[in-house]
Image 1: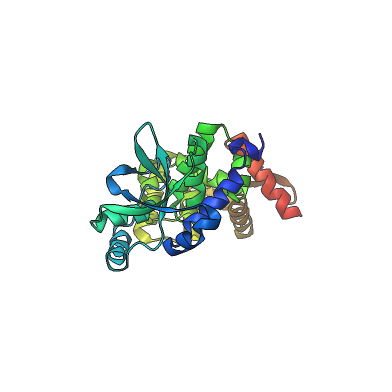
Image 2: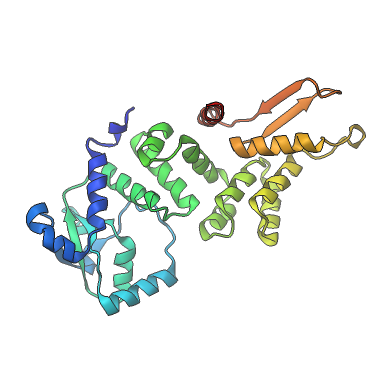
Length: 300
């Protein structure tokens, strides 16, 4: 499946939509004769959010600040909408924060640019990519957006990564966060822990152990490196003290390689350490492909 599977000309559509969404109301009015783009006053009650909006969390404090600015100075940038004849409503393409802030400001109308008709595939892609390219989503929102686009439109991780301007490893690592328990996903959404902490937790496959580590991680505000070390301590407990613990250089090597590959790595060796086996774990063919890509990149 090629990039065009996301819709013929979608690259140009996204570029055009982004350019429109960055224009001020005055700029739209001034360029209207050349571009054919115009601003319309639309009743707030006639507007609905984008069905495919990946963002789940809106910072209420920042929304209030934006609402106050709109009260004092007006909305400088119009939102972008598309008309849905079936609902007799305008659906937001870009600008849901501005729309919500305008509601908070108590206004009954909002400046909007009405886009041409867009299909579900295009609406979903625009909503996801517009937010991702602004790096405006938390890790779980990003992962859900990826999964939504992939599941609805049969898009592979490789094509999605290429389309969003991300590495396949970034997409794969993001999607793996959805394997975490709801409590941990919530912590990723509210910023209690970072994506790096989430990847460290994924190293621990036992749900009970992972839950315990998560609570320790949140309570002690571990760094990502500390979280990774704690995860490895669970993965490689010193059950055979009589044989001695792994040498520090081996533990360090495993740690560095696990960070580089984003998965569990084990070094198994004989008595004199001159010979051994390097074991790299993976949980899906996509993850195996991701590991192979990382190794190739390291060798180039």
